[in-house]
Length: 517
Ligand SMILES: [Zn+2]
Image 1 (cartoon, rainbow, N blue to C red):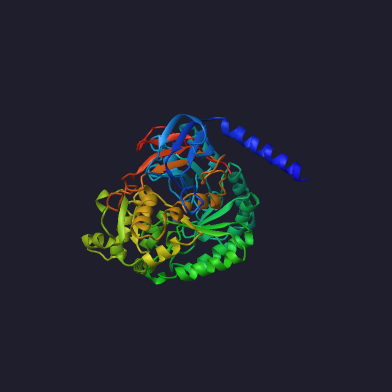
Image 2 (cartoon, rainbow, N blue to C red):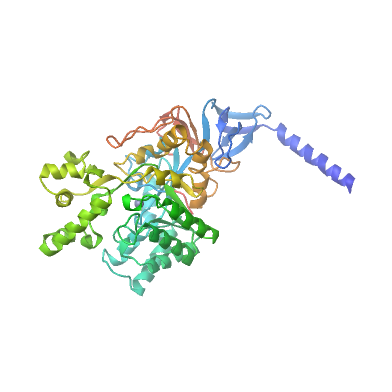
């Protein structure tokens, strides 16, 4: 027995030494970098060989011959899995030949973005996928099916419960859209028409997602005190996860407005209790203290806009309804901290941009709630709403189940800055997170939530989505006054084994893929 074992060991050693002698052929070899693999808590000094679209070898390049077409000396730089963003509004960029490069995200170190969040997705997804693939995309793309989108297809904007027949139609559409390779469903229960849906309706649709091994992503019904309240909204999310037996993911977790500040402690307890009951619940968070949304969604009562914008202004003409609408609008403004906390960041009338609602109201000589309807008549208005507390932001950020998500859409600096802003402020300046926690919460943990195989970790056999950044000047440049400034400090970005950023410059190559579940 002993001799046989010895013989076996000799064979193993021989096999290994044989393997060690063969040289490795690679397209790219990264050496001398400080490597964070996306999982561990400490960096390693390990060389990385990439061939075609995969990582083919990790090891000590002084002990093994690697024949590489190109070698990168990453001395002094951090090597990390490319960042994965679980919540963006890059939808209309990616199927537009002018913007499908996705540079705002690319320069943050993001190599995969998710679209179709907040209950709103392109319909049908098959067509969207085709368009993206035809023109090429700068980053990988994960798609979700928007519940609001399906509801609109079946029931329009009507504010009522779905009939059994309508629900069946939505379930069929859900399956149809998941068949295109979407990773799950999203809801926007705060927004019309998602807000008109009952929990039961959402559960029935989430069951279809569960059957397809997807996940449920939500902009919850309430992040403040608008309707059911923040904590009941978290409880609704957990209920959906439990009843549909689906992993649930809270998007942009926050305590929005003074009324709910410091509720993060209670929410963390509720989430941990659910996790102990084996409910798979996670969240993403952007690190800013202002949220961005449409002015209408922020301050106009939901019932008043039922049926669309025209219906809103028709109701507004009715004196009885008008005073009710104005009263509730005023309360919503107060809930968000006052009209001076609502900064216009996008408007067709560009003279409004950069002004807060209080200033605009003063210019018009009207009360803020009255001014809101003058402003809304000019078209779509996006605002930054300064209503989060640093206590809650940091409290959520350090939880092991909270990952980075930009929620990046035009006008708010988070589209161009989220990941480097989080690094600069919360890793470098305030030490809320260390480097490994920041990276792990921006790569492998996110990949696990999205159920994205072979990405988010530096591992042999995984796709080569790798970034190399300069820890000294990895930084955001976008702010509320100029939200369209690219971030800096990403020296290389490799997506599917090809350079997208080389020596800090965009290579003009569209190396992304629309990924399949
Ligand atoms: Zn949202």
